[in-house]
Length: 332
Ligand code: NAD
Image (cartoon, rainbow, N blue to C red; front, side, top):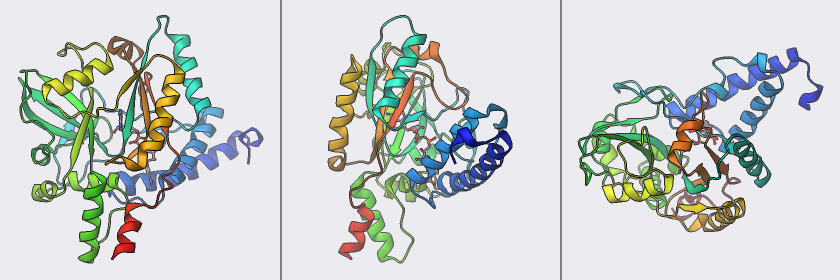
């Protein structure tokens, strides 16, 4: 039913049932690394809940997925408090919505600024703490405020340097992912052994990183791209794009496809380009992230309880390519 035809009571009832369903799906996805529905099904129901809550703000509850980031800490893991929360990203599904994001942002910002365009890597967020250049702790996003201590796990990932090229004390954040080839090989092995297969590389990465037995993590060929910091002060860079270049100098793995866009036309052409390239990339992406490039602007714009105000994800339509999982089934 169109939202304009609902009264508050009907909207509250529908929102409550959406929350129950979405929260169950979130548990399967974030806590058990085993989604029960496709992402676009989740995204559609989530969008309906957002629209209902926007039309009737008094029906919002604190347990609504619109107010929550991620999942809970898995049993057996030590909890890590994130003094600066690890957030989600707002998302849009069309050029018109992306343009509206840009219009809103520019209304609130007086000075001109560029966007840094990045691929949205389909993995899970992780945080690395370096003290005087030495890697001392790794953690997952968890619920944004409290994550899992995965220090022993991340020590087994080749792309993560145990020491930076300069003795910085800094918390670096990014994505842990499983390359498509490693995912296909892992699922083929599991299938041959009669074990359950992972639904997609994102869930395989999450299931492999959040392992109490670090030998399992070590075998899974995980990799990382770093793209964020809790606090940029220790760096020389003062833009997102320079920060990525500085990360590379420090020895951190970055995704080299990032590009500064000076106009929305350049943002749209970046999106088109990588939508076409998507099947040929060695890792999964589910969209593009655009970020206001100046780091002081990111800081001054800040965040809501769930998402930064200075960035947005443009989500691609569901991958129409035959999935690697199906490839595996066809070849056995
Ligand atoms: P998200 O994955 O849509 O976006 C936020 C995340 O993007 C960040 O936390 C970060 O980890 C990641 N990211 C990747 N590349 C990035 C880059 N270059 N810069 C910044 N961040 C980058 O948000 P979310 O809150 O983790 O999850 C919501 C999404 O998860 C939904 O849109 C849905 O598609 C999926 N989901 C699916 C189910 C299901 O049952 N299928 C359940 C829950 C959530």
